[in-house]
Amino acid sequence: MATCVVTCSAFLAVHLIPVSTAKNGVSSRSRKRILPDPVTEPPVTDPIYEARLYCNIPSVAERSMEGHAPHHFKLVSVHVFIRHGDRYPLYVIPKTKRPEIDCTLVANRKPYHPKLEAFVSHMSKGPGASFESPLHSLPLYPNHPLCEMGELTQTGVVQHLQNGQLLRDIYLKKHRLLPNDWSAEQLYLETTGKSRTLQSGLALLYGFLPDFDWKKIYFRHQPSALFCSGNCYCPVRNQYLEKEQRRQYLLRLKNSQLERTYGEMAKIVDVPTKQLRAANPIDSMLCHFCHNVSFPCTRNGCIDMEHFKVIKTHQIEDERERQEKKLYLGYALLGAHPILNQTISRMQRAAAGRKEEIFTLYSAHDVTLSPVLSALGLMEARFPRFAARLIFELWQDMEKPSEHSVRILYNGVDVTFHTSFCQDHHKRSLKPMCPLENLVHFVKRDMFVSLGGSTNYYDACHREGF
Image (cartoon, rainbow, N blue to C red; front, side, top):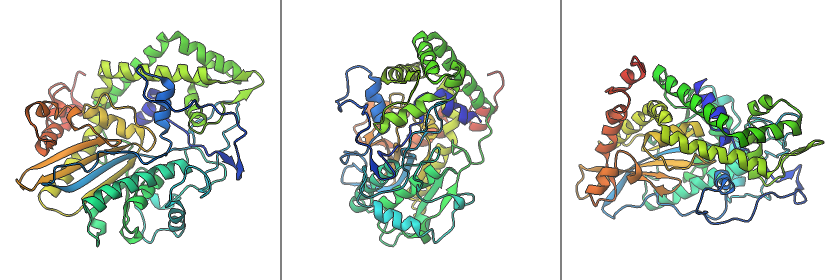
């Protein structure tokens, strides 16, 4: 329940909506367009620019820093956290027509990827091996002429086919992370029980693996969006969350322009302001924005770009204050610890020479990646866009084989020395990476220092007097 509140309330603009540009195969070129021409990053925060980044519409292949290391370093393991790709809204604006978006996969519709048809063909044959329950009941690819709520779109599939292809070129073709005769034991795959996360993971793997063999693909089910497995009970984490939500509420009350905007939109759709706000209209508005479709109208008028800008600007201000007040950081440290602890355990086994689980994929949500980013100290990282990727690389120095180092990359950008556990090391050392020990000490010990002096996860979760 706590996670849902963060998703639905704390980050109003987090739920973007994938929408196709055609209905029943008919071109939608006649629709009113709402996106301005692309621009370079503005000198000050621009809500339209930020929204465009969040959409992450596939275009030319992006440059990335994954896999960069001196020649005497060997890549040992890779751990990938992704947010699902572009999706249909989770909410609808009251008394307006749902966006008519086609969630079938069509080769002659943009965006497109060369592997799209083969992906559909492969998925339509069904898996040769079962997934962990209840994943076996989920569809393997989106296939509805009118998208269902929260369903992955063609844009979302292409985003992760593109991610997979990029990682394949780097990790397999360049660094040969997996042998030609790779086995199921060398992959660790985990997803939440949503079709959009399973399908995003499958799309990335289809772009990544040299041969997509169903007998080697086994996704484990993760019931929690925090990927906390058997360590989810943490009362203090929930207390941090409640305080953070209170901060968000007070900030919204102070924003008179935001309240006026919600009032105007409520009059347009003829519902009480409270009901409109509860419907999280930005989720649907982002769908229209990302898919370049005009906002909805009623006989009372139209929701427009100025309404969108006001709500998006408030989200940006909320993010800024969130980082300053540090309440979310407490939630993030406790929320991210279990999955970070799992990750360093796999790294340590790989560093010891174990060949299992050398490529890990967590197919997750914005509310999975955001706490991890904050816990790592990456306060300047933008909120997770559609198909965002956070990657941990483990490297061995072949000149000193006992030494292992890590790199952290977010959407292709090397952020290793922006992390709280490696900022100081960067000032003292000329090495291009961070010692694995720094990350291990951070997760095992230092994460809890700012949480009342606790020395372990259990004590931090149950300390009195918070």
